[in-house]
Every structure is written in structure tokens, then in C-alpha cells.
Figure 1: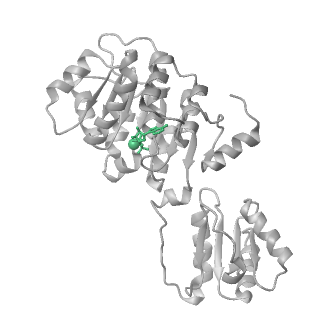
Figure 2: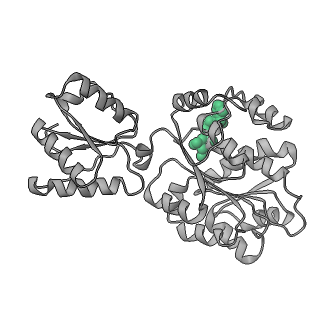
Figure 3: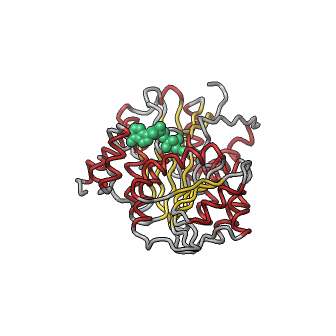
Length: 354
Ligand code: ADP
Ligand code: MG
């Protein structure tokens, strides 16, 4: 669907969608997705009016065959964001033959989640002959093994039980070309990283990988870098909030003399990937100047505001900061009053008097 750029941008902004990488336009209405008739029928049956933000922006990426990372809160509709493209993916592949493993593999951290996902997969897939099964630990292997041996297009699995079946040769991943890592953050929290890596090593390199998570901590980022290589990232809501589950506060007690060094180290941490917008709150005008100048001297693009600057200058500085033109703002409390805290900004209260 071609829409003027500014309309696409407006939609993304209104849904708090941010993207990294080359990204097709979001699918704002179900009718734009070119889903087959039977998928549309299921959507109508569910009574959904519009795609959720992660679906709107996730679908066109998933459908284009690219690797992607989708970060969005629980309850934002991630399951269908990967499941509908999965169904289309299966329909575009040669049918599975005797002895073939699944085309779509979804890894999930727990039995309950795997079962929920399978329910969705069934609702939308089975009307069109996309069969799925669910394998997880803590239940007898017999029935799960029989399903796998009979052949299914989609397998939803917890990592341990899947490895078990792979090692026994009950199934294989030679046909797997669409891999979903759902709740990647939780899987890592639960210690599944070695299992995930083991499973990945059995999947052909030309697979499409889609990773989903509610948060975006370092470990998840590392996994994405190791296995997705080139990927498009979609975020719903603030990246920094996602990185920290919630607003995270880190309090450090630093001697006055060491503060400047610690500040630089902190900025280096924040900017290790890509410098994000950062506000440094300071007590006095003099200190604002000193810190901003100190940062500029060592190459950080800092701007500053405080009460002695003209309204004009303050407006100008704030405007550039909001637009992301300048990334580091040093300010006194007073001067920054009225600056609605924009989303996804690091706040460093340099002086602990706030
Ligand atoms: P997540 O995986 O992001 O936590 P789910 O995929 O489990 O979210 O979806 C949460 C709920 O939202 C489910 O009950 C699902 O049926 C519902 N849902 C999914 N897509 C839509 C939509 N487009 N419109 C309304 N509700 C939706
Ligand atoms: Mg989910």
C-alpha cells in the first residue's frame, strides 16, 4: 500500500512505533495485508477491528521474508504478528513429505505459552490445512511423538523437549525455514540459551528468524546479533523503557570529585550502541556551563539551558533536543520546567537534590 511518507510517519508516531533498518510501510487495515480469504474470515470471527501496532508494522516485514525483532509489551498481539505470516509462509512452500520435519518452528519458554500459541495456530491455520502440534516437557512423550511422526507444518515447542525429540530422530529441522523465538527475554531468564543455540545450529542458514520480546536487555540483543545478522527492528513504546522492563532507577553514590569521570563513563555506556537522547540535570547554572563545556571539549555533542539564557535560546535548544538534533542536554531543573519528558530519554540527575 503506498501512502505519502508523512502519513506513514504520523501513523507510526500515533502508535508509538519506532523502527530500525529498512522497513516497509505498516499495514493499517486488515484489508491491506492481502491475507487469503480464510484468514480474513478468522479475523472477522474474532471480532478484531484493526491490527495492533506490532501487527501493523510486523506483518509487512515478516511477509517480506526478512529477519526481524519485535519488542512490545505483553498483550499487544505478538502471537498473530508472527502466526499469520507463518501460515502464508507455509502455503508458499512445497508440501511436507513423509519424514519431513516442520516448516515453522516456534520456541516458547513454558508449556502454558506453547499451548496458547498452538491454540492460535490452530484457529487460524487448520481451516487451511496448516497443521500444528505442541511439544513440551512434563507430559508423556508418546502422543507428542506420534504427532511429529505423522508430520505437521508447524511445531510449537519448549526448547528442552524439542531437543529430546531431535536427538531421538523423532523429528528434524531440515525443512524449517521460519523460526520464531517468542518471549526471548523470558527464555533467556529461564536459562534456555544453550538449548536455543543448539536448536539454531540445526536449522538451515537461509531460514527467516523472528524474535519477540517484551523487553530488550543486553542478552536478548546479543542473541539477535548472533542469529539474525541482518534484521529489522520494531519497537512499540519506548526502547529505553523496554530495555529496563520499567522505568529503572540506578542510584550511585559518587564523590563530587569523581562525578565528571563517572558521567563520561555513563555516557559511553549509553552510547555504546547508538547514542540516545540524554538529559543531565544539574543544580546550578555555573555547573551546567562547566559540564556542558567539559563534555564538548572531549567530543560529546552537549547543549545546555539554564535561567540566564534568553527564552529564545532556550526554545531553540529544546526544539533541537526534542527532534533528536542534539542528543545531550545539560539543564537546571528550573530551566527544564515545561519540557514534557519525552519518551525514551535517559535522565541523569547529576546532583542528588531532586
Ligand atoms: P502478546 O503475545 O503480545 O502478549 P497476544 O498475542 O497473546 O499478546 O494477544 C493478546 C490478546 O489480544 C489476545 O487475547 C488476542 O486475541 C488479542 N488480539 C490480538 N490481535 C488483536 C487485534 N488486532 N485486535 C484486538 N485484539 C487482538
Ligand atoms: Mg505472547
